Every structure is written in structure tokens, then in C-alpha cells.
Image 1: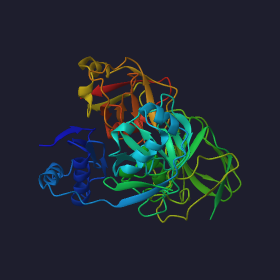
Image 2: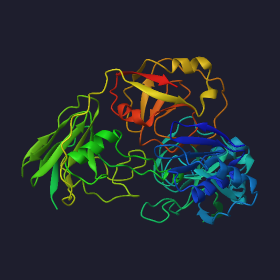
Image 3: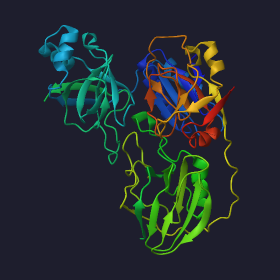
Image 4: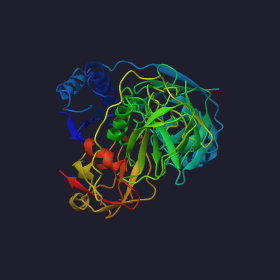
Amino acid sequence: MIEAQPAGEGALMLELQDNAAAVRVARRLVAECPDLQDVVPGHCTVLATWAGGSPPGRLLDVAEAALRDGAPAVPGTTHVMPVRYDGPDLHEVAELTALSPEEVVARHLQSEYVAGFLGFAPGFAYLLGGDERLHVARRTEPRVRVPAGTVALGGVYSGVYPRESPGGWRLIGHTEIALFDAMRDPPALLAAGDRVRFVPA
Amino acid sequence: MSEIEVLAAGPLTTVQDRGRPGWAHIGVPPSGAVDPPAYERGNRLVGNEPGAAALEATMVGPRLRFRAPALVALTGAVSRGPFEVGAGEALDVGHCRDGVRVYVSVRGGIDVEPVLGSRSTDLMSALGPPPLKDGGLLSIGPEPSNEPQAEEQPPRPPEEPVLRALPGPRDDWFEPKALEALVGPWQVGLNSNRIGVRLEGPKLERARHDELLSEGLVTGALQVPPSGQPILLLNDHPTTGGYPVVAVVHTDDLPLAGQLRPGQRLRFAVK
């Protein structure tokens, strides 16, 4: 049984065991419950919303079937992102992790990441699967301005800022790839469940 | 195509329609008019198609000069019209009275390029047109086929509104006393905007102190940062967040939330 909490009259928060389950359930809900308005994966949750009235009756059945099937989730697209590791916090991350800057870069390049969920800004994906040695706390004072394309570390996540915005993560590099373009279809480069590999630019 | 000159934009005037529901999974906030009944009523009064874009002004409305005759209605925190504005005439929308947001609906609608299906300004994500600027120009869309509809004025909002709130999804992260305290009264903080209404009052104490993994957020969520002072999320809210949501305000009461003045008092009826 999937546990579900109300999020107001028009939404349910489904609790899943991990991100892979959340992505799998979210995809199935999008495919099979067209009445839903938004299906928003979180780290270990799926928020399902509907407009007016009552929830689609099949919502929980569909979510549970997605878990029961055990079939591997539809494999996401793999994106290769060239990165120049010239971020202002690279040396600080090296100090925090007791690694050399070169080792930080090598470890960041080594992992294959999964876009766990999106949020914070249009097109911003929380990338999971990074080297545990590179899990660093966010800055206590967020920066007012982080340039678009900045590659950063925050807690268990890696991420790439889609546009210039404030930000509290540690900045280690940048990419020229556009993560979000409202005029493009789809507008966000990354979808939850997609894979990302970073390569040296 | 007719145009409107912005003589004075006011402190914050944006273009709004029904927003961008359905894009939350890629981090795009719902946006759209924060007082939907007032916005929809404005469109009916001038005979627009539902969903036509209007101006949403905050605290003080704009001063506008119309280059051609136009049919205009003011709804929300100011109720007036529909009325005709002649070619070359200026309209001073004036100060908000019954709330903080007034909608300026013009027959034909405000014509800007839609982004992801909406003409709304999203202040959080910088999607849609930027807020109005003094000296700017706005285009009016083509004449609609609908007739303007006469309607009675809606009742004025109560001075101390009571908003219905349903506990969850993270009410179990709080002390039972916090749910009692949630009833209020609360006072609206100065720092409130289209992203959220900041509430000042009793500190909502947490029972769990670990960090919540980021999860989806809905409009109306009462998100509680470490200060214990909740933020009532409005339409430009981020789509995910890591602060627990103690309760969610009923959709039908959100228009009242969108009209709360800094310093105003409110309560919650917690189910």
C-alpha cells in the first residue's frame, strides 16, 4: 500500500521508498491518468493534483501497479554535458572534502547521474547518483547571482543553473548547454529519470 | 491593433491570465491571477473570451492613456464599470480599497506573446512579459464576439477573513500544539508578494527536526521555514521545496488570501 497524504482538497502526496520508485509512479500516472493536472516527482514523493471535484478514482491503483510490475522504468534519455571546471568554489569544495581540486573534478566526471526531480527554477534538475565524497553542505549565505549554465554541488545533489538566479550551492564549473528554453519542445532539456554524464569541455 | 500608453505603472502591475498549470514537473510555477474570481469577472464585464489577459495591479493601480476608445472594467480591490474610455483619454485606476490587487480588464484583452500557453508574468521564474514600466506601450487584442455582461458587485471581503485549511501533507512533523496555534490570529507581514503571504504570529513548533527531502508544493500550502512563521504560497511559488507544509488552504478561499493587506489579521478554520 502506498501511503498518501492530502495536500489540500485538490492534491495527494504519495510517499515512495526511493527516487526510482517516485519516477516510475510519476511516469505511469502521466500515461494513465490524463485527468490529473500536475504530476510532480520529489526526491521520494509524487504530488498529484487535479482541478475541482474528486481525485481520479484509479490514481492509487495505477500508482501501485507501477510499483508491483517491477519492470524497469522506461529508460530515460542520456545527456552528455561538456563542463569547464572553473567554478569559484572548486578550491573550497576541495578543502571541505580533503581532496585536491583535480580529484574533485575526476570524481565529478566519474559518476552517471539521474535527474531525480525538477524544481527551484524552470528546467533545474536535482541530479542524484554523485560520488558521496562530493556531498557538501550548501553555503550559509546564498549568492545573489549565479550565472546560467553554472554546475554546482548542494547536499547530495549536483545541478546546473538554467538561468541567472540566486543560489546557495557550491559552484564548480559551467556548461554552454541550454537547460531551459520556453520556445523549445520540450522546454526543459532534462526530465525526471533522464541520465546525465559530464565530460570535460 | 489599438494601444495603451502606460503613463504611470504603479508599484507593481503585471499581465495575468489563468496561468501555466500542468508544467510543475519541469519547475514552472502555476502563476496567473491570484484572485481568479475577480479576474474572470472582469473579462465577463467587458465581454472578453474567458482566459483573456488583464492587468493585475498591486496597492496602487496604473495611469493609462488609451489611443482608441476602449471598454474597461475594474475588479477585485476596486470595482468599477464596465465603462468607456475615449480616444486619448487617461484612466487613473487609483488606490486599492478592498484588498491589494485590482484587475484592469480591457475589451480585446492585453495582447502579448504567450509563453507555455499563458500571457502571465511570473515574477519567480521571469517567464512572460516583464512588469509594466512608466512610458511603456501595451497592445489590445482583437475585438471579441461576446457581448459585455452586466453583473452585480460581489460582496466586500471580510476585514478579518477566516480561511479553511486542511492539515497535511506534513502536519505530523509538528507538535500537536502547533496545529492548535495554526488557528491564529495571524498578521500579514510586509514582505508578502505573489510568491507567498508571510504570516506573523505564534511560532509553530516542530516535532521532527531532520531535513525534509524536497517535494512538490501546491498553491495555498502553508510552508513552515525554521522560523516557525508560515508562508502561505501564492501563484508564483516554487514547484518543489524542503520546508514541511503543515496544512493547505482551500482553493475557494485562495482569492481572499490573494487580497490580504500587510498588517491585516486573519484566522484559519482547520478541519
